[in-house]
Length: 64
Image (cartoon, rainbow, N blue to C red):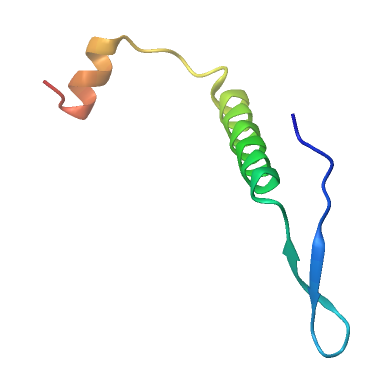
């Protein structure tokens, strides 16, 4: 999935790395991985919560 990362760095006048340049495809893949991890964390956090029916959800959200 994630290709080998080949970052380039932008440094300030003191030689400290201040920015990273990535290939756009690598950047998009990293964003997708972060989103997947976030979704997995949310699933873990809500795993033991009681479920509700679609009708209950609509009623709580006042959806027709």
